[in-house]
Image (cartoon, rainbow, N blue to C red; front, side, top):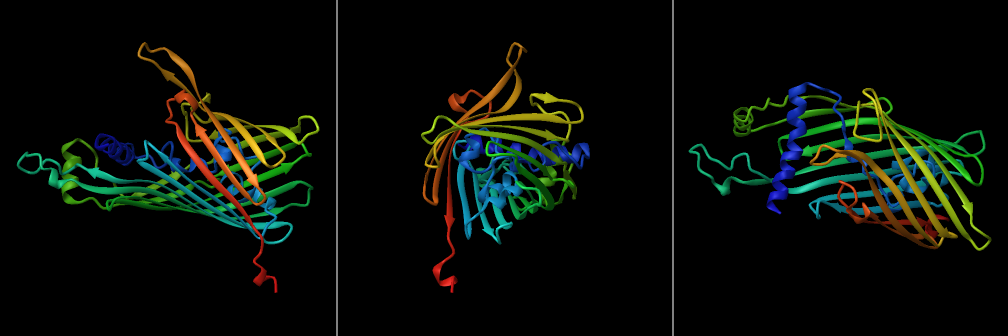
Length: 367
């Protein structure tokens, strides 16, 4: 466990060192914790969810989906762990129907690693190893999303947007505040087809970093050949998601089948995804769902399509399969997802649970 935490400490500090060395203000994978996804129903479908997103979780996937909220309050809750429980990922979403055409919502996301050993002072000035000098710190990323959506004049068309605040903190020696805007459209073309378009960080998201290294840490950075990080600005470049969803009944007994394809187009350069250029990259996600009415559903998804090399320098395509199941009883919905089934991908597998609640207006407020 100590070795894992030490490795994570290096991974967390490395981006700040790299940012200082190359001088880039728009690094690749900026604010990447916001790409993990929320809701076991969406994760079970490989993050292919922008066209069908509804309720409080649509704040994350496509804010235009908020117009589907038909209750006084819609809640979405999720907790998951990564790296054998070392990293914690939490989400809460709250949506409220203002009237029959508009809705508002708020979402909170936290991704954090706690109790990371700070080993920069492990060796004292005399060259001796002193374990008493080891302290711990927390690296945490926070996002606060404020959303609004409204049905447009064209039947079936909705538009929505997010204003988001981002706070990232690494112990007492690095922190940032940022803000950005997301926008989304959702079109219900028919009873069978839905389409979605999402522009995340549409104006680029600005993150202002402040570093406060102790004199001892500065000495370690210099001694190890690293450039001291400087206060500066980090930009998260826009990401566009194009989505299409189809849903059809199978027979006449309430059984249905649905499928969705999402294409994530990133603009921060070449990524290790299925389609990539030096300017942009396209990462596809495929999800399927089969269910009985609105009571139970089983899900399957494909995501994280990457090219990897083995020890013989041979390149192959690696795909992450996901599975999920959901149960809904009246206004209560419980979902489970098992990501990276069979550990088929280089990404780590995880068990994810999420809960959704739809609440009517309290009786004492109806008077």
